[in-house]
Length: 353
Image 1 (tube, rainbow, N blue to C red):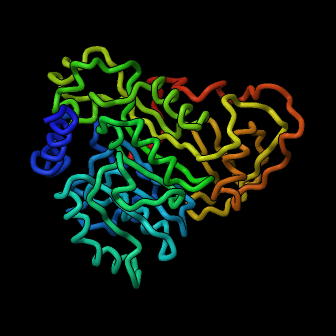
Image 2 (image 1 turned 135 degrees about the horizontal axis):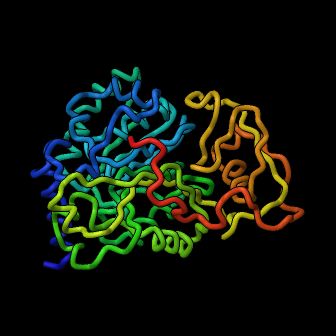
């Protein structure tokens, strides 16, 4: 048996048989505090069955606003909480697909489908669950350029072939589509000898991506600019496991990246401004693009060229008024960091779940 097959089998067993609820997790890495949920997310969660909620393993809240009518794909959907939240936000004209490799998790999500659709008031389901791996979305039946938004909650770190995962994500995203995911990242590369530890792997630690490698991987896939929405230092809360990981610093980060051909590898100034019109129902007063850009309704904000593209060439375009184009270049844009890296490691902020 290959190492990859052995590790995959171990993961299926860990999340299918060993971990029956969040209480069985050995660290706090994937235990979320619902008190940090956005009010509109918490209101939807109140409509979700308790059995699903006991099996939530995640490190963030990777469900962006403004997804009404969108096709959404959840990678590693588990028992389906985020799928059902996205289902409610996407509405009856949207469609949400949940993919997970653990049969036991998919079975839980599937058996609550009819009840959840009834609670949401939908005449027909706008949700489908598929038992598949996130490394081969063709096998799961996901066609090229067929998805508006990809979400994932603390799952991609578990993959042994992350390049395949991100390559597949950008294959199936439509032009202007968005990857919005929460995951565990590391401030340094995790040593190889820790990657074979089944507990550290299952607890989302040994597979954590080094932030520098993550940025390089996205650039190689044609995405030179990603944005950090939230970032917090993780406390493991298990002395034995913490001792095994040594001095590695781990972070829970929520990241967004758009599939756009117009992005540059630096933040450039073209004299553009953006005005948020306050038309996203979940965000009437302000819209947070990332940890540096928050747009208050009606207030013009100077933006770099990449940010203008993210707002003008995606589903967000109907909610923003962009002034200016790229006909005149004024040099580097100084109001945001010069490159999309983890500028403030250890910064507390953003939402957890």
